[in-house]
Length: 189
Ligand code: AMP
Image 1 (cartoon, rainbow, N blue to C red):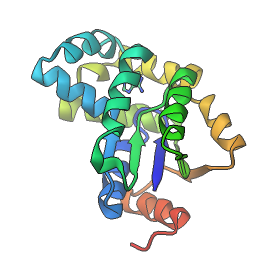
Image 2 (cartoon, helix red, strand yellow):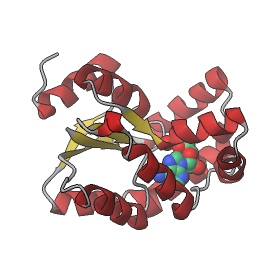
Image 3 (cartoon, rainbow, N blue to C red):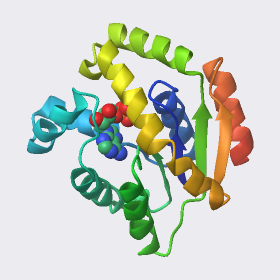
Image 4 (spheres, helix red, strand yellow):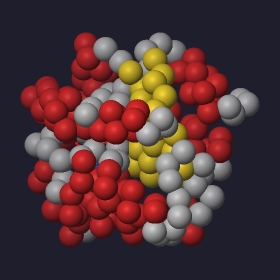
């Protein structure tokens, strides 16, 4: 299964993605997690990415695309994967298509987690307090939501036109949301 999960920052993508990927036995590939791990380790990639992340901006496509291409070429992705937080721009959609098509593959399903923006802001503020993420200050949260609406939400139309987009209500109990996702994927809990 080659899956992608989309939705605004704070929609609960990471939590759901980790659970679904574990249940399906496929890797959960979160570009945000990979960037954060590089920041923690102080790698060159992390140093470059943190300049953008701390401001709530997107890391340049050239950097992000190269990282994802490398990650998807690893053997554990052969049975499939669940991408979380990528693609976020039209260029990234093109790159992902190119990576998959070169192996004769396609995305099977794109899951959009829908949430109300007020609920998302409340979640992000709470997460900032719990995890101390530098990209979760209020101004940065607002910028991240704005970027999502401007640059990333329009990508949903591309996947809708391909007939692979499913919308899932992301509000409510975490387990209920997982149940809704599994139901559309046809997976038994
Ligand atoms: P996330 O945890 O997915 O919200 O990502 C945290 C931050 O990492 C984002 O605000 C961006 O700065 C950066 N990032 C993650 N994924 C991407 C991507 N696909 N393209 C550009 N920047 C990204």
